[in-house]
Length: 125
Image (cartoon, rainbow, N blue to C red; front, side):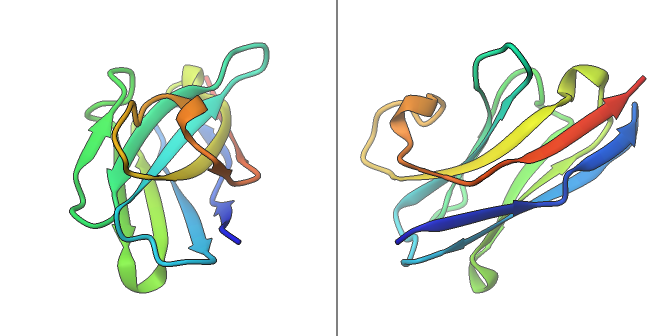
């Protein structure tokens, strides 16, 4: 049973930084993709970034490119999202998700089976 547990959310002022963590368990994640999505109130869940577990390839949404960095620590089975220069529009619940990398769109939430419970990020202006 795959389990994903996010942590690290909180309240921060605009321009500040936060680092989210996603602890993964339940299987080995070779050939899996690990991703971060976010959902603001009244909005659809949107893609933020993903990383391939084996090769470490990354991809970002345009809205966060240059400000956010996704990484993984294989020894700790943990994925991170370093968020810098935060903006009020980054306010959302952030979710970690994973799927076996069999192709398809890794930036589409419908492609993901396993999800964490989410962690709230609030950026004040």
